[in-house]
Image (cartoon, rainbow, N blue to C red; front, side, top):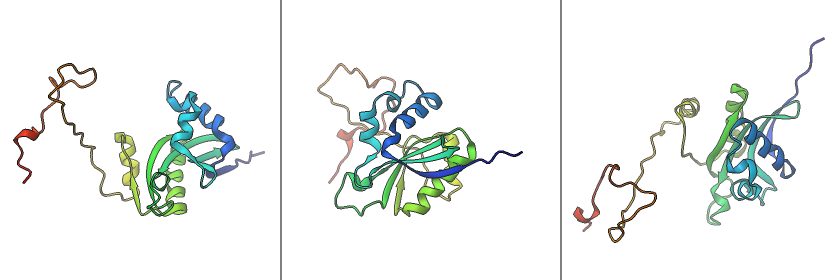
Length: 172
């Protein structure tokens, strides 16, 4: 007899935080901050307005197989239309096809006006191009060096390429 598989794609419920954290721990990294700090997960994805986590779940027989986190910019700016501008976040799928289904569900449900993402892998870029995103480019990094400091604990200016020196630019 063939076993029936129940598949469900939906937004994460408030009471599912521990299941999400466990999934991230087991399938992403036990050291990922979302796997052990609920307050950080809440800061990034808890949606008080919609009473859910802004994470799309792909479940098979009630077990998480995929997650796709997203941030609604309207959470941080009251002048923005609710649920219309978003940034994709953590995305992990045990089953490859589930990952695409989560994106499709999110786009069809929210119908966002704008979408952003940072930190895409080469693998992720291929999937986003399937949705006809034509403006996928590498993120450009910029910085302004503090010339009054001599010791830097994070920045390594000796090995970083100098793109531009602001002192040599005429802004007028």
